[in-house]
Length: 321
Image (tube, rainbow, N blue to C red; front, side):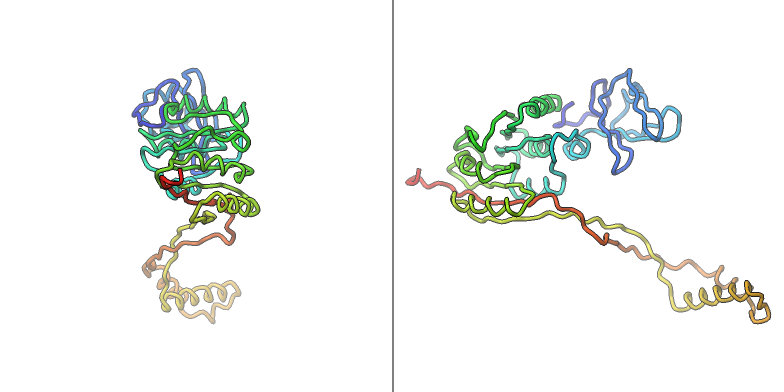
């Protein structure tokens, strides 16, 4: 399944993202002999073959439906098997923009992990750029390499099993940007400096969950001659959009009169209720008030993932080389 291009029809062996809701997505490899069961019913894979991506597919027993979506880096981030903690869309988009990545960029990444950001980086630098990514865990390296191959990204991503904090990257005068998602990025920064193209400015980003890591990273960046050192935290806050009616004073008075009249009637004071039917008629016959769209934010914002520390590599002058 190629993540770099879009195909129209589902075929046998394709990776399909089964969309049930915004929070419920599942990756499926289409197998004519397989079925997918969930709370909405049974879905036979053979009924997916030949359907267009984006199709609304009803379950076999008619209890529900799901959408067949074409895989993208964004969707893959939401459904991939977690071998490590991963980066999500808010952080990925911020990092991609701040590293000034574009088609043709050459990027160094360390801490491949589950390959979440690798997919997005590869799409950004395609078709002529390249990602050099490093992972120290051998088993994760094998799984990630197979995923990159299955997703048609092998020509854009070079993956190597290597402890870059001890052995470096083995690259020099090559890359435009560096991304480090490591427990101790300060150990890899001197090696990352060697990998930057000497004739132009470059950008580096270190992704760290703890502020103590940020402090040591900033010290190392400063000692290695990086400038414009900045740290960001990307927090996501959801807005719930709803409509509320806009009542006039007259509407409020009529509504209160109707409520009071109902209370009196329940207490048996019919003689005190003047023209209850008239009040009810006024309330029932008045037009619905206009609606106003408003947004509401949650009382608590739980969005911390990690701190992103950025810095700029300055080009080396000829007399310094």
